[in-house]
Length: 287
Image (cartoon, helix red, strand yellow):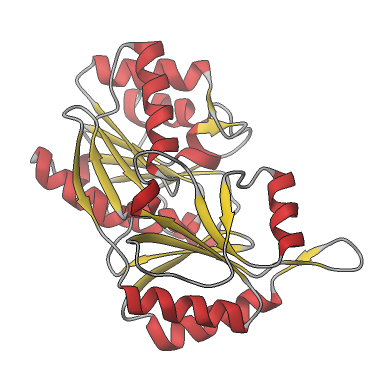
């Protein structure tokens, strides 16, 4: 299999400590580009955050990340020509319905908006203040604005929902999240794309706005078959990307659903796992 494009997730896959690319990962990706390959970032992160990682990669290697798909496929950016290729917004009536379900179930609602797209990594959040402060302490998100009501006048690209709460024992559980998730699925699943991004959080984008659709769009732009793509990911929001790539490499084993759609699984420490996958299955072609 002749791999011409690498599409990699960021958190839990390429990055460690949420912001760093290891030297081995840098070397492997840079070698791939120098041999004529193309590298793309496909992430749930906001645009500003993903762009900073791409700029840091370029500063260290001299090579550009060609495309950046962010907010779980809602946005696609041509990083070579500095151009947004598409922006898929969530219908305003749908975002309002989601907000009302979240509020009824006492969950946390977070939205990424057009007004912040190119200037900030801010998220607007509705939910219990204590829970938000707890997330802030965990560094899950730090730049946010707490809202009491949902104003859907701005364009919304992605919604995060979380239903965790702090139990008396100090443990986290997701009973409320499951209830809200079931209601959203029952009412809106034919109009949205919903995927589990972590144990306690779901991501929602417009229907058919996901990493797999981004792969197909990039494939058409480059006139390269998706069979010549290698995808790297670690969670369920990478499944669509795996289904649309010739090589699908799961980083770790935390998601059984992802492993089911993978061609290979990288075991062991995550820090240099992308380099291990590139060296074993692209350069050495141990297919």
